[in-house]
Amino acid sequence: MIKERKVRFGISVPESLARRLNSLARAMGSDRSKVVNDALREYIHDHIHYLVPHECKGVMVFIGRADRANILSVLDDFNDIVKCYNRINSEGVCIDTIIVSGSSERIVELHRTLGETFKCSIRYVPVAYDIEGGEGSGCL
Image (cartoon, helix red, strand yellow):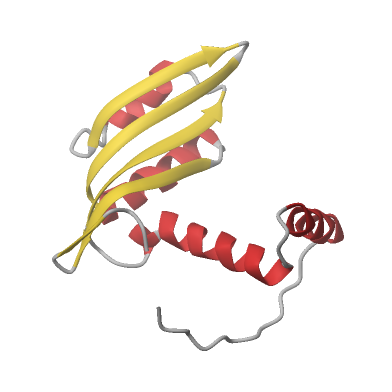
């Protein structure tokens, strides 16, 4: 593996987040730089569809209390990319999963629409993508 040149830059985070980062690094037997590097790599991997137009397959997961009928009405506008929708309700907590496949631009649009409409955090996990003709497994 080729060793890539490192770039140093400063960031500002809330003190409580810095404490949790330090605790996590210690618990993992690592250092802050490695933990932040791994977190950034994963975040960029999960959001590659915002950077490069491509065909993509993945899973969107969000947890909230949005009414199922309202979610279905949004998903109906994205029936070209939504392949499967499932809701699990466990002890008053709703976990919604959406399997998507299609253009990254439409996946971005769905991601934003769900977040803005239901004011919830949505995780997108790519399963496979095709950037510039090269298949990917979802791993960068």
